[in-house]
Each structure stands twice: as structure tokens, then as C-alpha cells.
Length: 161
Image (cartoon, rainbow, N blue to C red; front, side, top):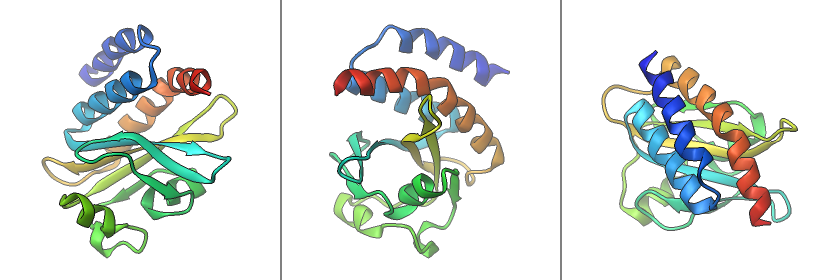
């Protein structure tokens, strides 16, 4: 119950923001706090250019990948969350991003963020849960959270266009 109260408090702060960068940063910080992860990136779907991109990514600059690239691309394609607790053994994992950033991904969870028409507009990717691996409790919490932030994110994306 404590986590849901935390999300409600977060909602009050989110409603007062209208700038995409601030909204993405707030969502990212809250998601990390909810599941005790080291990093969070929010990939935005660009249907026109057929890419997924981040405005900011913990630790490294902007990331741009194809719609079907990596675990994030798999999440986009299947419209289903992914838990990958052994990323270097997963065929969809993109180790070159780790190489470029000097970061080592130990585990990850990705959750689609749907717009009001139930299209995937974004994907939340969290890396390196501090204790243990990601599990079903994290999945339930982040799925709820993704649904909770989807309206605000959709409004910010529309206002940026």
C-alpha cells in the first residue's frame, strides 16, 4: 500500500509539469525509486522515422534504435513487458550500448506505455535492480505506474509536436 501512496504523491507533482524533459526525468526518478533500480530510460516511439529514442538516459546521452532493436524493440513489437535477468545471454540485448557507455547491465525490465488509443507510445526500461533480480511484483508495480503516467506523457508528446 505504501508504494501506491508514493505514486499518488508523485501524481500531484507530475500534474504541475508541462515540459517533456522535466516530465520524463520525474517519471524516470520515480520508477527507479519504486523498484530500487540504478537506471531508467524512457524510449519514445517515433512512428514516422520508425525509431525509438530517449531524450535523456541515465549516465549517457540520447539513445536512438530501430523499432525492432533490442529488448526495448521486443517490448514495442509484442506490446508486452520483458524481464531479462541475464541480459548478456539474451539474443535481443544490445551489448554495444553498454560498451559505448562503460556501464554493465546485470538485469532489466521493460514496460510498454500505451496512449489513449492503446498504441505503444513509449517504453520504460529499468536497469540493475540493486538487490535481487526483477520479478513479478516489479512487473505489476511498473505496469500500474506506466498506466498511471500515460495520460500526462501523451499530453506532453502531443504538445511537443
